[in-house]
Amino acid sequence: MPEIISQDDCKKARSIPFCYLCGKPLSSGGETNRDHIPPRKIFRDEDRNWPLILKTHTSCNEKQSEDDEVIGQIVALCWGKSVPPRRQKFKVNIRRYKGNLMPGISGVPIQGIIWRWVRGFHAALYREFLPATWPGGNIFTPFPRSDNTDPDINRALFSKVLIENRRNRTLDRIITQNGKCIYECAWATVDDGRTICVFGLRLYDWEKMGPQADGPRGCVGLYSAVTPKTATLSTDSVFSVKNGDSLDPFETS
Image (cartoon, rainbow, N blue to C red; front, side, top):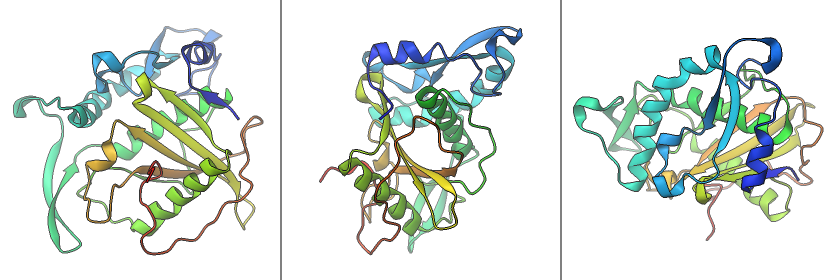
C-alpha cells in the first residue's frame, strides 16, 4: 500500500525525475524550482513540518502563484487567519441552497486548483505522470460555490467508497503538514471496464466550511486513468448509496 506519512517518505518523493505539471524530465534543461503541495501559506507555522515538495520546471510552476495565494486565503480561514477586504482575492456571493440563502465563493478555479494537487499526489505516490486532462472526472469541494449544481448523491457515493476501503485497508494515502493534510484514494474497475480512482482530501476541518444541514461536506473526487503498477486495488467497492449516508469521507463517528 503506497503511502507518504513521514519526513523520510517526503524526502524520497523529491527524487521524482520528472515535472509533475508537464511530465517532461527535469534533466531536459531549463530552470527548476520546488512546489509545495498544497501551498505552504495554507498552514500555520507550527503545522509546516514535513511538507510534500516536488521539483518542477519554473516555467510550469510560476503560473500557479496567484491561484496559490487565493486558495491560501480561503483555507486559512479554517484556523482563524483572515485578510483585510481590500486584499481579499475571492468574492462571496449569496445563493439559494435547499430553500435557504447561503454564501458561495465565486471567481476562484477551486476544482482546477485541487486537481493540480491531486496530480502532484499521484506523482508522489506512484512516481508516474498524470496528465492535466481528466476524462470522466469530477471534484466536489468542501466549501459552497456560487455556481455549484452537482447532486449530493455523488458526494455521498465517493465518500462511501473511501470509508469502505479504509475499513478494508485498501487505500493509498498521504499525510503531511502535522496531520493537517490528508489525502486518500482507492482504485477500482467499474462495469464498463474503466479503471477509476476515487479520492478524498482533508485540510484542517474544511469540510465544515459549507452548509451543515446534511452534515459536514468533505472534498471528494474521481478520475479515470491507467492503474499505476504499485497502486492498491479495491477488493469490494459498493457503488450505491441511501439517504443519510455521509457526505464526508473522513467522518469518524
